[in-house]
Length: 117
Image (cartoon, rainbow, N blue to C red):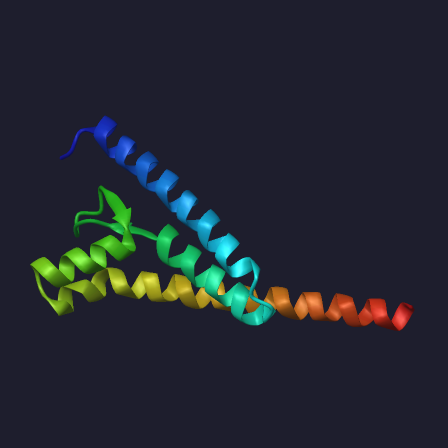
C-alpha cells in the first residue's frame, strides 16, 4: 500500500496538470467555428482526462483510467487493458450524450428567441 500523503500529492499534481491542459485545449478550440465539433472535442478530452479507475482488482487505490489502460496494456496484456477501457469508453459516450443534449437545448432556445422577435 502506498503512503496516503504521496497518493494525494500525486492526485493534486495530476489535477493541476489536467486543469492546465484543459485550459490550453479550451483556448485552442475557441477559434473553431463549428460548435458541434468544438463541444465534442472538449467533452471527449475532459472525459478522457478526468475518468478515474481502480489500479488493481482489490479496489483500494484509484488512478486516471487512461494511465491504467496504458500500463495494463504494456505490462500485462491487451486483454487486461479492457478492465479500465470500458469505464473510459462509457464516460466518453456519456460526455457525447451530454453534448448532444446541450446543443439541442441551445438550438431550442435560439429558435424560441427567433420566434419571439
